[in-house]
Image (cartoon, rainbow, N blue to C red; front, top):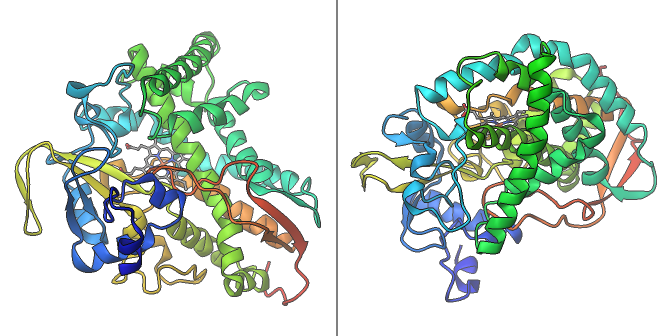
Length: 429
Ligand code: HEM
């Protein structure tokens, strides 16, 4: 651990996990390890986002998420990232955009119930064949034996297409979803007035495009798409413009960067652990593909943290928390908690308890789109297996400079080479 502390410049707090550079440089593991071992509930007095608590082990995170009446997600107090300061401390150029991930019951319950059926088991079954066909078709366009950008050609394409399908968004404009999602999921975009204004402009551009879709769907309702579902519900058909934009940001950032990163982690993670990749190449049992999917999501943890705000003075495992304290729940760390996931820094595709990961959160806000993400990643794994293709990563990815959306390699920077798998028997199909 000492290494990180010694190498940290004097003006940077070594245990401030919200520091963007720790994530950009992929240096978050050591401070997290130290906090898990020595101070799993830790008060960081000084950070760019003000003082906040860091919770880095598995059980306290579950505990906090199970008590939404004490530990709020509400946007009014700052919402779900360590960056927010709530409506009392809005900066110039910042307007609150309520979204249901950043609401407490009963409002959260009603809005979540509205969209949840779109991600339920029967919808997943309905989407399965199409997801498989799209994934297969896209893989078949990749240039085997030539260097190309995995993120741009595969991760972004597949997740953008899925999002466009979920919204029934105009297909020819679907890449705007990626652009909006990248810009609006960036918690480092509140630093200057200019950045905040740019962010607002992007949000309004997105809002205008979706308003058009909303008006169209009001006249031509669909059966399955998210906009029609919202339009037909009491909980969501009268949202203010800000809440409309907030919920769209939630659904596009929620569904886009996260799944994209898990697909990039499939390529990068298995490249880092070739012996685990070999297991998947040798054994095409569908259960192993599903387990590997959970394990990749655990190891990657596409959202590094969620945040809660204490609504009252309370005690937390011997620590005195005061009303309005910020509490960051570091899923990235809980998913490497040694007491739950031994050797957690490694991908182990047949890890027994991989599906216990907290990458989708826990409790009433647990990711409503988890099944869609799982379907996409499992399909990718099995379609690559069927084609006996291997991804060789040619250079380290460039990572996002923020502590929220985690290790999203930028498009254009993840060079990969697909090669045919030549070794290993196929034990099942
Ligand atoms: C690997 C991919 C994904 C990861 C890691 C992920 C992660 C998360 C996490 C950590 C939460 C918050 C949980 C909490 O506070 O306890 C969440 C909530 C949410 N996610 Fe995901 N997500 C993924 C994919 C998706 C997809 C594909 C969609 C939809 C298209 C989606 C939509 C949402 C929504 C709407 C919420 C809010 C749920 C609520 O507040 O009740 N996510 N997700």
